[in-house]
Image 1 (cartoon, helix red, strand yellow):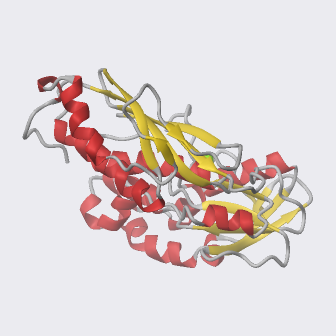
Image 2: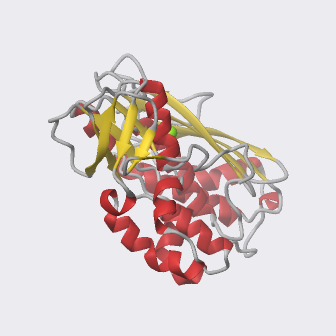
Length: 324
Ligand SMILES: [Mg+2]
């Protein structure tokens, strides 16, 4: 919930606003030169660094009526950190560019900084720089960096026939939470709503998968089927996935009540729901799966993603430019 208590962004100078934000941001264990100069300096002991960026736009990716500043900060951090982890890298730093309307409460911006810190600090990730601008809606643009620690990056294109398909994290929770909010039934399940507002990704499982020999990996941001299709296409293989009840019995069970209340399908949420930021990976047959991963299928020759032996609809999942 937003609050109109306290000062608005328009009431403070940029310097005064930054003075409130900076102390809330984590410095990070890889930061060699903290914010204060024209740019920060971050260690890249590997000689390479992983870099990615993702943007959240108000009324496109979140609504201020549903998401507080802390929720948006956590989500912005997690979706970027998950992309770094999905390469098999350890996240090291974020930079954040923020567009904010003048009538935004300062407490909302402070919440955003706290949300970033909540996700980054435990991992030793620093928020090492950023930029502020005024604008008509809130836009949070994050770039994240990571360290491969001497390993090869894990690409989408490395899956080979015979590999095991595995997943770490939850599926369908964020989609269910959003569906509850959209139906005005958010009070029915705080935890599912929370999974939408501030998803949590098994970030440590990314580097662990790389160490265990993962042949391909990505984070599930647009839905299990859609993202599995991306690994299949990039690798030039087909994937045989077990159905939701077999592959994700806990998630299906957890979603059953909300699905029943909304007349929705827990299985579809599991297959199509995006933004849970679990990790989808393939491992050589016989590899020991790292903690958190469960086997959900096999890689085979071919090109399609099959679920319980049947072709999966290609149009499912999140399409950024579709009618979602
Ligand atoms: Mg991704």
